[in-house]
Amino acid sequence: MHVKGRVLVGPEDVRDELWCVDGRITFRRPAGEAVTVSGWALPGLVDAHCHVGLDRHGPVDEATAEKQALTDRDAGTLLIRDAGSPSDTRWIDDRDDLPTIIRAGRHIARTRRYIRNYAHEIEPADLVEYVGREARRGDGWVKLVGDWIDREVGDLTPSWPRPEVEAAIAEAHRLGARVTAHCFAEDSLRDLVEAGIDCIEHATGLTEETIPLFAERGVAIVPTLVNIATFPHLADGGEAKFPRWSAHMRRLHARRYDTVRAAYDAGVPVFVGTDAGGSLAHGLVAEEVEELTKAGIPALDALSATTWGARAWLGRPALEEGAPADLVVYDEDPRADVRVLAAPRRVVVGGRIRA
Image (cartoon, rainbow, N blue to C red; front, top):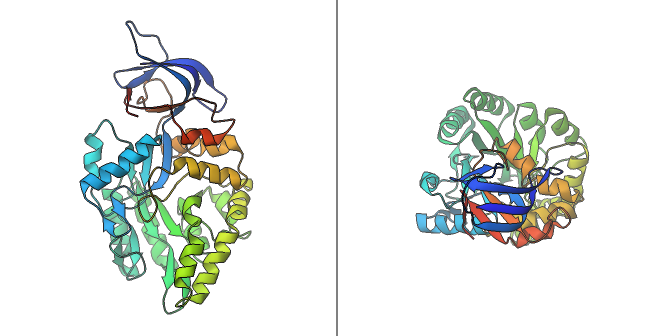
């Protein structure tokens, strides 16, 4: 395959063409004929918070997981960090037409303090053991549930005591895995960051006190703004039983854009993730990029958060010599208007047009 036009190897590194040979990228013209695809080419998009093999009720069958992966692929998402799933999706690795998945194993949560059928539900004494188990099971990541509603308090509270989370993160790092955590609220963040965590999902509880700590330690956030948009609906549903929690969720939602922009301005790494696979549909990566721009992140940096920057953060190549030929082609320059991402002309996986 010959891809020509504008090949966005990096934010400012724009080339005229590349070729896909035996499923790999090359910038050296091969011998023989080639199918030509023209347009603006980007590395396959990254959804750094996605759940293939999961729906609102728990694990799904392979046919449903396949539909989820195909929906993401057709939207241009070709690299997924699966941020927690109880399903075994290793069979996807044998498919040359589906996105690459980096798995974080199964969520690890406190007993009766997370969505039913999603997580290992354990007590703090078992945290190190389960983190070690999921570090071995995953692809270099472990996912904790850092906070959730405490029914006795009627609001979000931290899930883990500081000593146990320090030991658990140290164990994951010893095994070569990074650790991320679901966190909506404020109170768990300092302990998790000071314990050495690598990333926080959602991060709606960031404040002017904790943002500098994230920046100093280089802790990334994946805001999942398309998911945070559901907070008012969730708050309405819990108003009668948990009014304190409902009010808290509305406050977190109201300041969501300010929170993300303040983190970005302070130098906190920000990456694109949709939280698809729970109650959210798959294929929302373009909407999430647009949400980052609404929060005030410049378009080029929002684009990098799902392409060059995100791939570097996850340790995967972009449009490089010898890299897997996974790319998306658009009719217009996505750097000028990120809404272009919603309408890919061609999706190429392994050097073959798939959508």
